[in-house]
Image (cartoon, rainbow, N blue to C red; front, side, top):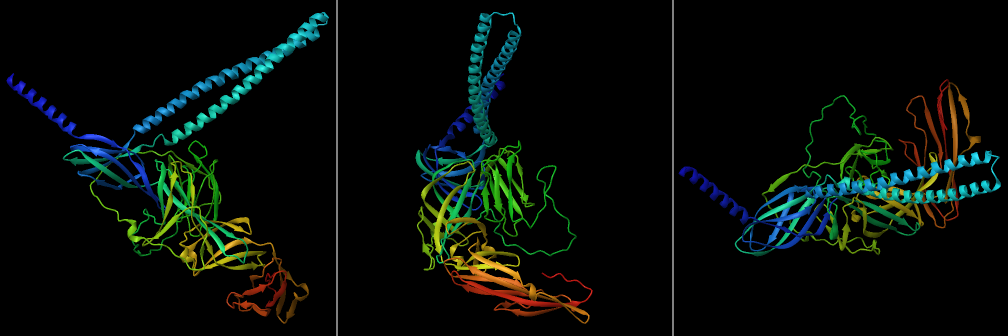
Length: 631
């Protein structure tokens, strides 16, 4: 009995000690605000700050409401105060998900009530219509009864008229009520869809364990990297006329669905891509094998394969239930070219050369990567799922201040800064550029794109017209920019405006540009080029065992613009690959000839309202009995 009492006493003491130990670890939630967001091409660095007090002994400071898409290895905690940070723990919190599930249940209950009302009103409409049909049948019976008195007929007619009027009024009221109820149901369905998108999304928590000898004030700064955020560039290129420089607006399209709103934050846009592998590649041995096409399934029952000839893709993004996904982000993988879907889930995007994959992402849905297979791609996305994870971060580091690399960008004197709506500082880092937006910005967690105009430049350009009338007699305007590397351009889509009119879109591809960046500004109908075959000089002759075909072409150019123009016209002689076939280049007026390719190039300066004619002749000799197709 004494031994039993001793064991019970020891157990009680252990429980008391455990309670004391637990009591010594106080927990406290800290209120923080996102102060700064550095948005990269793929991902974002978030900086939160907050103040609190720490209790004596060990205590846990809990940061709540953080993005579930956090990169756990990127978490850094900077603490100022008379205490020691012992550890940092990251985990996911599904309590918020339970709240969202309760919200979904509440909407379901509201929908049931509305549906009951709709059913009731629909039944009343059916009752009124049945009574209306009954009145019509009674009226027919009364009309056939010739034995009724005039007063009886009048009373019956008055009754039918009054009752039918009442029924029509009631049917009108029911129709109005049903319309309101259906509108209310549509709003509830939309609200439910939004909640379902976020239903499986938890939030992150960062638990910082600290030790202090006494009560102390604490300033915390929490920084971390998140996915489902980024930006891509687009450009507005405006040309007033060919005597003026190009006005180029450099725009950033910022998006995020990281699970937390960025409200009134200091925004920095960086051209770096932290998720891109920075390790130098090693060239492996190249072993030849037979080619086997690779397929990528869009759904379980279909697949797609890469088509390198696709230059533009349009389509629609839906969820697994076939509903449109609005404001989904559509990016060409490996480039900065992207767009977002409209309210109906539709998108259209230009495809740069050597690009093979499109990435689709949206709030609450799994990211998808698909090969570019055709000009029309309709994509179905599935709801995302997350698992509870916990990680202890044992390493600490201090991120070097960007101020160490401050740089004020300058441009050639020929370029002039145009008026811009925002104050933006540009900094050059070792391998990238950063743009600090001085005005606080709000980017909500909805996946929608916010456009920030980073800078606007007036860029001198050489305007040149081009025409290949053998292929197409329209004239195309090009603008050539030298020293374009100073502009720090990224690959992206541009909107083209010429003489105040939107003329289309084009891709800016600095990777493929040489010393001069060429921009296509579309067709100019004010310059007319005609290529005509001169029949009287196009003939056939026979010489011994050979046949000779002669061809003569006239090219006329008329400048209907008010300015003089520089025009490049290209045509060609045929090139023989057979010894017995000879091409005689008889005449080419003022043209440069490439003897290997047979290409002819005229460089023409033409004043306003003037016309010029040029042309070329050639003959082809080949053996009789053979046929060669000429123009």
